[in-house]
Amino acid sequence: MELSGKRIAILTEDYFDEQEFIYANLRLREAGATVTIVAPKGGTEYHSKVGWANRSDKAASDVQAADFDAVVVPGGYAPDRMRRDPAMVRLVRDAVAEGKIVAAICHAGWILVTADVLRGRTVTGFFSLEPELRGAGAEYVDR
Image (tube, rainbow, N blue to C red; front, side, top):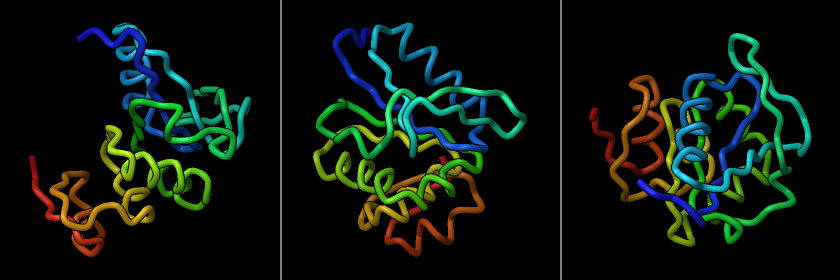
């Protein structure tokens, strides 16, 4: 798939799942997308569950959903930390409201719950999130 000209935000925070982050980041860039790593603080190092580091490009407070064509949220425990930051939640909420693609991997459903964007949607995610996803108004499917 050719993604030249597409602008994609990948969100990060401490305790991200390195496989979900690395694979998304590399494949999107390989397909020609311009990827921006967005976190609570720009220019800051964040560490995965096993200590692998990445550096954010921008703070969520310094970007808007309109700056991107899509938002990718890798899992791990990072989404639980992301949802504590109002700017991260706003970015996800606005991206959904603007009809952008928002890819939430594994535990990333946590930030979707906090952003209150699941009502009436069909979603999947890590099985332990099913009660929260359903409680937020989503139809949970295991696929």
